[in-house]
Structures are given as C-alpha cells and as structure tokens.
Amino acid sequence: MNVRLAALALACLVAPVAAVTAQDHSAHAAPAEKSAAKLHPLTGVIVDVMTDKGALLVKHDEIPGVMRAMTMMFRVEADVLAKVKKGDAIKAQMGRNDEGKWILRDVQVVTK
Image 1: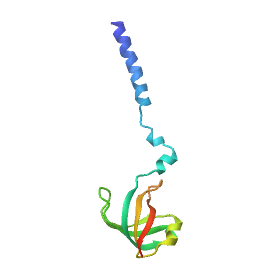
Image 2: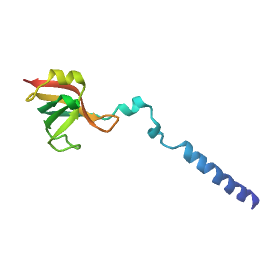
Image 3: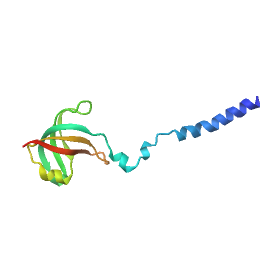
Image 4: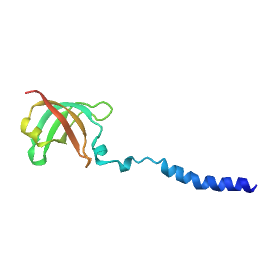
C-alpha cells in the first residue's frame, strides 16, 4: 500500500514539470520569427498615395479565406511610395507588421 501511495505522490510531482516542459513557447519567439508573418497574394488598384502616412489606399480584390474585396490602407516601404501613383494596378503580398498594422510587400505595378 505504501508503494502505491509513493508512486501516486511521485506522479503528482512529475506531471506538472512535464506539462511546463511541453509548453508552447511561440509567445517567446525571437523577433525574426515574429516578423515572418503569413503573407497573402493581393491584386488591386491604388486609390491614393498617402506619403504622410507611409501608406497606400488600395481597392483590392477578395482574398479567399482571408478578406472580402474592399478599399483599405496598407503601410509600405518608402521606395514603394516613390514608384507608384494613383490609378496603378498592382499585385503584392499582404500581411501584418509587428505592430499589427496591415502592410504590403513586394509591390509590383502591373499596368500604368
């Protein structure tokens, strides 16, 4: 009987340690891992170039399984702002930055 009680006590001590060891540590991921956010292909037309906000206002097509078609603001790199203009049709990769703001990467003008 004492052996069973000792085994039960040992199991109660080991189980919490095993649970802590097996925890998901994704919340503690390195910054490089966090910035590797999921990107989705986007096609649309630039409605406005918002240089003061470092962003484009884009009327984009539906992104299946992610978002319906709409017009919204996306942050972009400064070099993108310099090479696009209102009315340009674009294709890009849509995602979120580390602050949770919508961004476009790999922006390409497909027609002028």
